[in-house]
Image 1: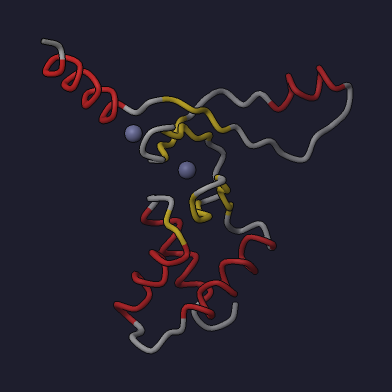
Image 2 (image 1 turned 180 degrees about the vertical axis):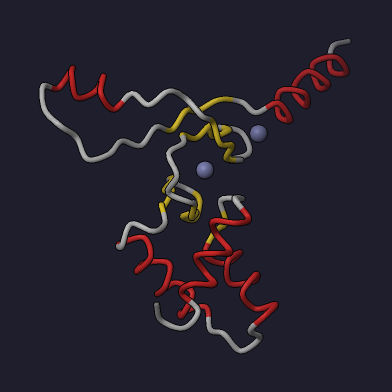
Length: 129
Ligand SMILES: [Zn+2]
Ligand SMILES: [Zn+2]
């Protein structure tokens, strides 16, 4: 693997925080102060193309990177926070419904996260007069 690629892969898979390219860059800078953000972008692209990383695209926010281990995502519609969720694999059910094999699927579930819900409740309590 080319220089840095392995470390970038490790940063994304070990931290498990759905980092943006910029955040991966900040992590890499701790060890390699001279690394360029372009290098980070390039490796993230290659690693994604090679199937070693998974890219999470959401309109209106920067792409995030994640480990490829099978799991799905809960995305808060309010603050955009992404949480991992482990649901049963439904690949075979999709294939049954389609009548053919599929390569992969990407499940993004939108909700209001506990933090935002709490905030909303607090606002509702204080705001009624
Ligand atoms: Zn939220
Ligand atoms: Zn994830």
